[in-house]
Image (cartoon, rainbow, N blue to C red; front, side, top):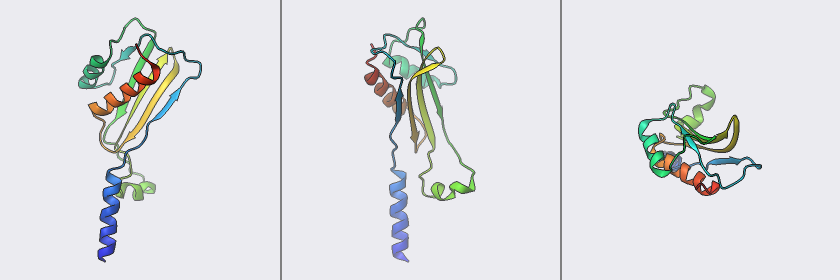
Length: 136
């Protein structure tokens, strides 16, 4: 009985510390460095917008636009995921950054998070994008 309890505790601790890797997709025809981007602030919390604006000088006249999408407190009610929900391996939130030129996605960064998205997650994602695209 004690072994089962220790196994469950160990399994729960490992599950809580889980961190996923981002999925990054880049348009092969995109030219770098990207000289300017503008920020779409629709649906983005003010602290997140302020932090992004402190990291980069966005140009409202630019034709390349950054879209920030996220969802917090994801709850799955499907009985098919009961096993993953009980072991804390079901994501609690996600974060997606997309750079679009018109309707075409030229860069995408997506990550599942096992805690709610916060400013540090936004900073990590943006700096990763900035480095990869050699943003000026």
